[in-house]
Length: 298
Image 1 (tube, rainbow, N blue to C red):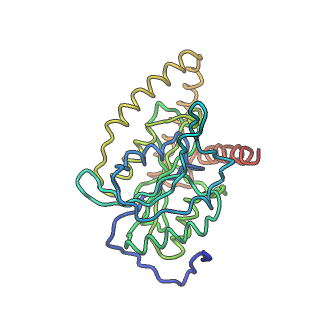
Image 2 (image 1 turned 90 degrees about the vertical axis):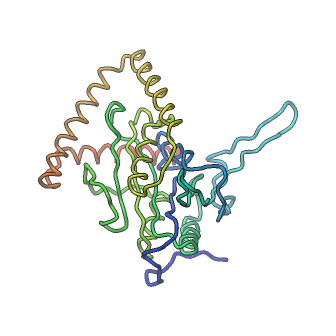
Image 3 (image 1 turned 90 degrees about the horizontal axis):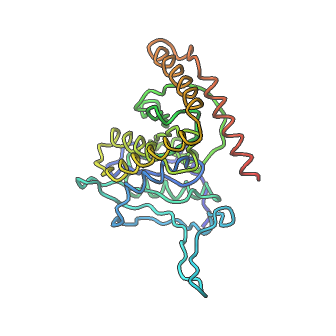
């Protein structure tokens, strides 16, 4: 079967009566493993698989080699990559669909079309994406989240910065864009992870994503284990900073962040046009993306 993107004139119900669909993919929007750690808390291990993607055709094995166990003289266990949509229930029995796993490397339009089929089959009223990007922010301040959506009224929180930038796309961003084109409601949250913590697990960012999700959907999620990991991670980070003499650098980052948030708060009360540090933040984002392009080409 040939998979094609839906046309703008194809009908799609804007208001569904089924469960919300949450997607958190390992890939471009995976800084600090924030989305993956959030998905781990949303995954019960007892959910019902309602759709499984043919990931063998979408996955770049040489770029992200799955692990295989070698026992003395033979290969024993293979961690095959999987991407599924699973029907889960929260602590109070509220249903939701969770799509978690590797971000497809290939056949994005086929992937999007399959997700749209799942949305229509299960009468999904809203699709919510969770992601994370490295930014010039300190871990000693509350995580900043950028909210987005296919319609302005789907963006349920005020962003502290406004900028127009061209960014490399991801399977998740393309999914939201195509869903908007086809008349489906989609939104999401991207948490800003301290750039110096982007390559390690950063539970604080995951908790911020879950908090935004809970505020939006009313889901009840057990995050006790994640909060315990956060305490351990923060203690280890502070120890590393002290050992490496990074207090002054952290202090400078804190000053920059505080100056930006003060200006942003004034801007939210007045006009976004006067946002004092928006260009600087956009430049940082562009620099990150430039590094990502270089890494992808290397």
